[in-house]
Length: 286
Image 1 (tube, rainbow, N blue to C red):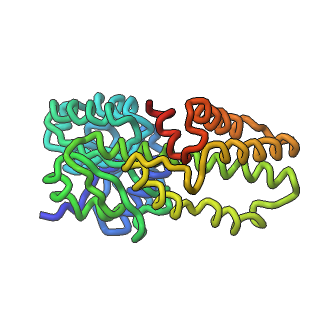
Image 2 (image 1 turned 90 degrees about the vertical axis):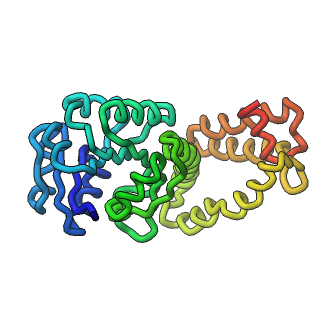
Image 3 (image 1 turned 180 degrees about the horizontal axis):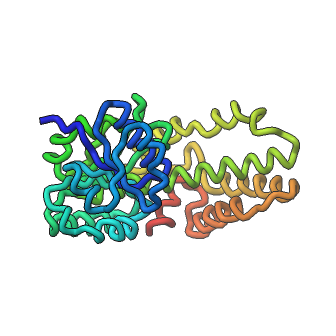
């Protein structure tokens, strides 16, 4: 039988977007948040406000968790452990793979099933066609609640291991935050030189389209092929030195390019100066 009711616990921007998406699809939505006032807008749209965690858990079989970290998950769920039996916890909270596995075991010991999730879009992307979420955990549970999950995003089920979704998510966040900080550092240099973010935007989009490089490097990484036939660390050191000097001359903090330059120089010192950028994997994971 298709589930058409759901509980959402945690009403930050992501939880708000998720609860709103369910309301838009005609679901019967129960919400709970540590600060009750955050539910006001959703209640005005037709959601039910649970006064307690026990009431929130007891209202529906499917419970979506959108909290800051797993410490917050435990702080909430431990208020009503007896209400967990028979629940499917769609845990979209960010944390480490180890903690995701630990939480899945904790839930199972109390009669609940955890589906771990890692959402790949910001809150405005919830419910859009291109949205996707990593899921891991029991395939049977994912399939049983596929329709409810697909209200939020598409499904990329990675396997039964409850830690896989968290692992894939954190790998993505590793790249995402590093890339965005690089963008902001570049914009600091641009602004220091009178160039607006709007003026540089089309150049930024083109520069940060890494698809060619990712498709070029991925098979070489898997093959252990670090040939310096296209690029090499010696060239990279010179390039980042120029970036650093430009930033410093512009009065911009140089700690980010310094950190990159340090890593590149460590690669050269380890004997990889004539090898590709991919040889840094030997430094990052000896």
